[in-house]
Length: 215
Image (cartoon, rainbow, N blue to C red; front, side, top):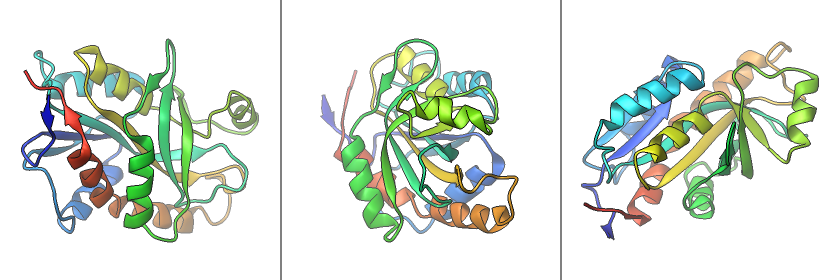
């Protein structure tokens, strides 16, 4: 074991081009970046995420690489707003839940990086399609606070090749009282984009705090 210093790689996986753009343009203003940080666009859906993450980590599993799944999500809890942050304690999909590393530390770092934004922590569930209407209530009843299509697949794939720190941080763009089909979506999308651009200092703080497995 050794401390995760600047030399330890960090992989940040997101699905969409706009998410990748937000993370990459925010990266230039973030101090303390690892020497090797990759913002990977996986494409939409769990299968695309699995394929892209497995390829990025390589056959040997890149054992010292920490992985964060990021991007936008749909909030499930009443009172959530576009621009709120979700830090997963675990991700859920088919199979056993995947516990996340250092969720509390990451939530605290995000509160400092994006002051004034609400940070929610709890289970993040996966779906293979965009969730609408009654499905929100059904997923909320399981205890999940948000849903997206790639985080669970990203973290499951990252751990398949060996133990490593993993986390999932999402920005709410769609919530029970603020669905994408409603008026105000454009303003909510801009808010979520701006928040996503601001998260990298928190990601780097989380990354520096970790003890990563070394070969």
